[in-house]
Amino acid sequence: MTSMDTEGFQEARDLLASADVVSVLSGAGVSAESGVPTFRGEEGLWKSYQPEELATPQAFRRDPRLVWEWYDWRRGKIRACKPNPGHEALARFALGSRTVRIVTQNVDGLHEEAARKASGGNDPSPGLPLELHGSIFRVKCTSCTYKVPHRDPISADSLETLPKCPVCGSLLRPDVVWFGESLDAEILSEAFRVAQGSQVCLVVGTSALVHPAASVPLATRDSGGRIIEVNPTETPLSPLARVSLRGASGEVLPPLLEGLD
Ligand code: OAD
Ligand code: ZN
Image 1: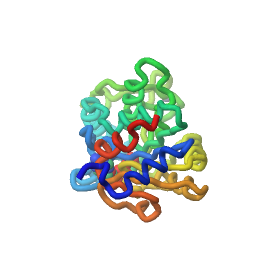
Image 2: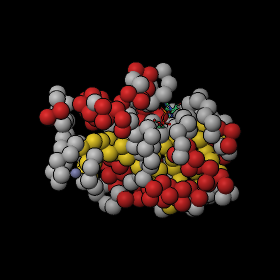
Image 3: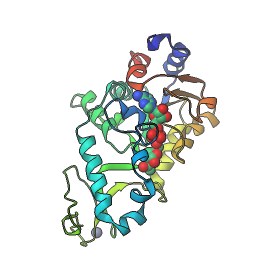
Image 4: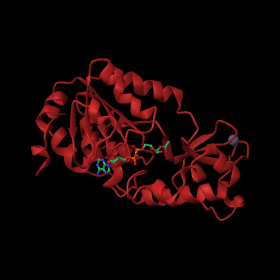
């Protein structure tokens, strides 16, 4: 069966075609076909690691070397990954004439890379996502407001080799949201504003278990818009979605968004 035969495919296309403003909420599943591990599920990252041992401020205070070692390993894996046809289709869609805003829970930078590629040297900004959970390729100071893009490998052999703030000398940490931390208030309210003002929220590759991100599509629905879900498996959002397309985003999104520029 091709994605075009999937139940609801034409309805989803019609909804998108008639929407002036579309929001997109993406999660780890959109990057799965690029080789970035998801968090949950059989091969999920949280299967082999205890999140509370690594992705918390307490863990970083207790053993910053171990936390940095894990992030350096993840950064290495992600650095080797390229955007897949799902990211590319979303980037083309966002750079088209329709108002489209991508909101992502991903920290891998692949939406941005796809947008830069799709823009062909023109302004990529309509395709740049709102990053709800930060970026794995940015670091910030644990004491002051210093924050900077950072892609290179770091050496996590000892405390001494970990990256330090050039302003105050404190340890730098990945600029990602950890368990028990709040999301950036401005980015979060922008995401809800965008979702509220859109006629369709396209939800792609998220288990929709982690809030507040998983509540973003509800803002579209509460203001009379529709949710379209793309995910191989059912999620808590499925019963609220007008259409659920059961498939991989790299296969479903290109035909779904084809020609809807
Ligand atoms: P999850 O790992 O929880 O969920 C991934 C989702 O992607 C699942 O629903 C899969 O069914 C789906 N999926 C798998 N392969 C897919 C494919 N090829 N195409 C489309 N969908 C596919 O990831 P998230 O929902 O993103 O937070 O997780 C949310 C947050 O939990 C993450 O941002 C992270 C984690 O704790 C923080 O680190 C703050
Ligand atoms: Zn500092």
